[in-house]
Length: 208
Figure 1: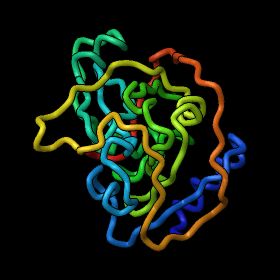
Figure 2: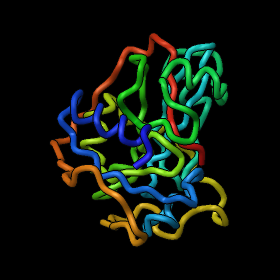
Figure 3: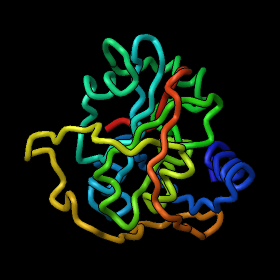
Figure 4: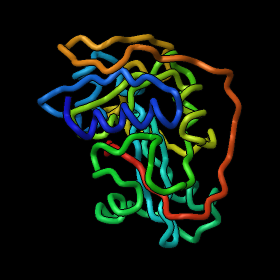
């Protein structure tokens, strides 16, 4: 296992008591489409970590791979004048993870996180595990809990030609390629919408 993926798994266990089931794909999972193809699930089940800069403060949006972040909506949610894609160096410096592999939790900074409400329509979603080649499965309720995310309507649907055919379906998929694992449990907890005070620099992981 890659040292950074191993570090994420260790921190998730130490900080949250969560056993991460890491799946590594040497060909990479840098985009939502890449990740879905590698795992064998719909693009809608990829929980892409999108990092934006809202009036110079970083904000993380955990967005379905079938959608795009609505930047104006996100700016309104944090009370900013505008929101744009964050700088890769700012992401690394603030969250402690390089772009393409930023996990949805275990960040160096306590930053505000929002979660695309469409992700809650699936039994299981997949997120980055510390590197562009590593992902892990997690129940949406558990993802919301561990990331401290506020569930909101933060996304827009791209044109039909770029949208995955299973968008909105309730699917439980498992990886079909060879994988390495560090733990095996993915637990669920009752869903509750939570919010964080959007105060510090915020960031997130994987590009769509």
